[in-house]
Each structure stands twice: as C-alpha cells, then as structure tokens.
Length: 355
Image (cartoon, rainbow, N blue to C red; front, top):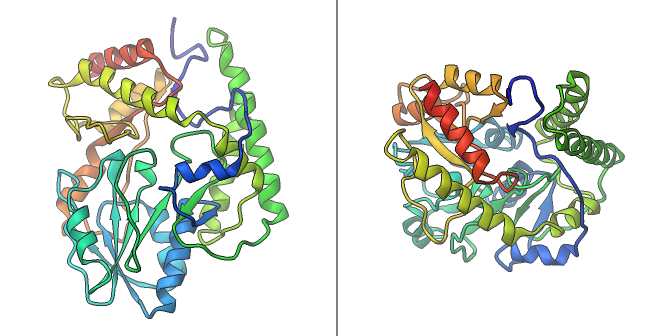
C-alpha cells in the first residue's frame, strides 16, 4: 500500500465512527471525583480560575517558558501581568513566584511534573497554584484541592470532543450561544464524515471531502481562539464525553506507547524513557534535530505528528534555551486508541528509515 495515495492515515483530528451518549454525571470519574465547571475549552477553564483569583487581588501570573499560545490567550485577555520561569530539558518546572502571585504548572505529555508536591505544599501561603493537567487527563496526578490549589483539564486531545474543558471551581452556568450550538453540530457531522471516509482505507484520496472536514475542525479552533474566556458548553458535548469507553482508551494508549518504545528506545532520543503505572501518555514524544524536515516527510506518507509546542513570540529563546530547544526538536508520535500494534510498527519503521 502506498501511503501517499491511499486514505490510510495515522494522526490528525479525531474522527467519530459512532457515538454513544452517556450520563454526564459519569464525568466525575474524569474530574477526580470533584465538583467544578465544564467549559468550552481548557483555556476557558483557566479563565474561570484567573477571574476568581483576580477577585482575590491577584495581578501576576508566573508561567512556564515551555507552553503554547492558547494558554497565554486568557491571561492576556483578562489583563494580567505575567512572567516566565525556566523549564529544563527533563520538563521539570523551576518557578520563582512573587508573593501574592499565581503559578501555572503543566503536567507535560501525561507525566506528573517532578516539582508538583513541593509546590502543592507551599500553595496558599505565598502564592496560588494552578495545575494544567490537559495533557494528563487520564493520569493519576493525585490532586487534592485546597483554597490555594486549582486544576484544569481538557479531553480534546484524547477523544473526538468538539469542545471541553473543566476546572475545580463551581460557578453559575450560562446557556450556550446559538453560534456555538451550530458549530458543535457542524463539527460532529464533519467527524462522522471523516470516519466514513477513512473506513475505506485502500480507496483513492478525495481532496474535496478532506477539505470539507478539515475546514470544520479549523472553524472550531478559530472560535476558541477568538473567545478564550467563553464558558458555556452545549449539553450534547457532555453527553458525548460521558459515552466514551475511558478505560479502554487508557489501556490502549499505554499499550501503544510500550509497543512504540520497544521499537524506538535506544535508537532515537525520547523525552520520557519510562512509563509508570500512573501515567496515561498523550503521545510518544521524540527529539529530532531535523524535526521540521522529518515531520514534512512523515506527512507526505500521511502520518501526521503534532508539535507541542511552538513557543509564543513573548518568550525569548536566549533567556530560556532549554524551552527553545524543546520547542525546536520535540515531535509527538500518535499512540491513541485508534491504532493497533501494526500501525505503530509501520510508523516506527518509516521514521527510522527517514532518519
């Protein structure tokens, strides 16, 4: 099979081959058993916490120098002052917060940040702590809230969720707008179209259909970029989230990571060399000197690997060389529940042949 000519694909936005609605109360399993608020996105969940902290007099947010632009969006939209702290090559945070500020800590790629417990023990005394567990949605990060600790999650990188974010801060819910309701159904339709299209994996490419569903996906992202503090989420989104088999997703991702690790460990530089029992990885993250060229070559073979993350222009590479190097070399290989061992072996073989 010639990957460049057939529909067979690894990576890219999630398709929705079938849907099963669940009871949204079952989502407590995803939220550490805590009450809180579901939002349109992870950045909107962050915005809720920031608004709460602003009401307490917090004016400054201390951010990791390895992050994406979407995290900055609500910080800037709400008018906070902010500064950056180093993240070393092992993804260990090194914050030095000002008294009365808030620290954002990211659990990268599914792994609990090594400084988490130290920061948790101090949170609520001199600073507030916000944990971003969007990439560690299904990992056991052992979060227990108090007045100085907050956490956000998002399922959008793990399942075909059109929208979705959450934080452990209960607020009064508003009704979603007509615009976002329409966008949700447009995106659901596009994900189902992609699923039907990819069922015929040996068939020839249909560029017009691919452009149709890719536009629908990008329209949703543009809405979230334009509305980083928008909270209301349609009920259908929560019912869809509750209908996924989360235990299967956890196990498939772990198994796929281990399969890929067997093929690539010792042959290519990886970010995380081991998978503990508490980790459900976002992807298999490798470091490549010629990342951009290899990413393009993989894409020609219809293997689409995201970059987490390109640094925002606000971060000076000279001040944060480790973050800059991570941003320039890291590539996330897909290991999600859509794939089985044969897919992973094929991807590993292609990657090694391109090296």
